[in-house]
Length: 349
Image (cartoon, rainbow, N blue to C red; front, side, top):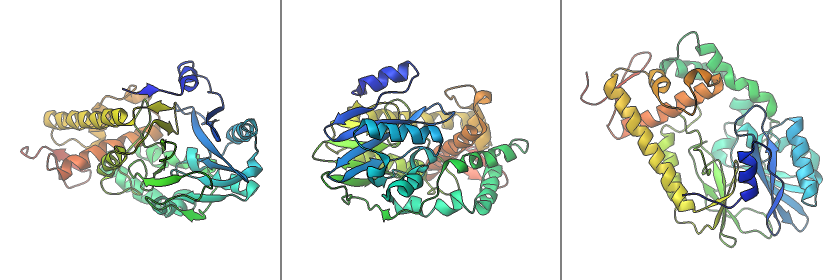
């Protein structure tokens, strides 16, 4: 059971308003930065005070509202954007990476990213033709109807403008200390939500900055797509177990609110995915030969399928496939070739 420690953040979440800038530890601040047109509402940027400035974890979307919120938050914390010495990016999704380049342009800060995310940058944000072609083939094989295919294929292109492309200066290594003077931050590589997702752990302060890896209320999207590892859900579940034995008193996530009882939350997330795997197995049992699209439409989501935006439908199909792939790896589901792929239980014809 999650124990809420970010009480003001939780109250703001319940009232559907932005939470305040907060000092969460001596020398450590939480700054909410808005996300446009997104149910997550904001990303929590964390600012560590240094002798010669600040280091931030994540940066927000590249929008004027986000830029203003980040600037104002740093001022409230006693600094400014020009004081930023380092931008530690948990992963390359736009709400985390989008403003990193603009911060560097303003302050000269170095940008850090895991190499598995760094190698995807150009294909995702600059030369996208090949990625779009491969994604279209992937979605067609998943059984996306021809009438939906163009919309789902191009859905991610709408957010390219909310990223200032920036090649990282530093590549994080799993288990290695990060160069943030005065703070004992260690990189914990946690693939799943993205191939190069990382958390940052302080043994001295018993803190885990969890990015999107572990959130207090929802689970991150773990989806198969053309830039992912072959078995992203398997990678994610292993990454959850990797965090189980860390000495953590408080988790500082990138969304929602701070919380305690990391182990309890990890158990909840693992149970959620076990339930989802069983739900998908049951659907395949009832409807042998279903495509990934068929299964996605039939699953229970937080809202009716027709109310889910195209970009989120695409993410949902990838998430469904991530569960199917894990079931395949355990010989609980088999795939029949063709276009699109269809799925059966091992004994079904």
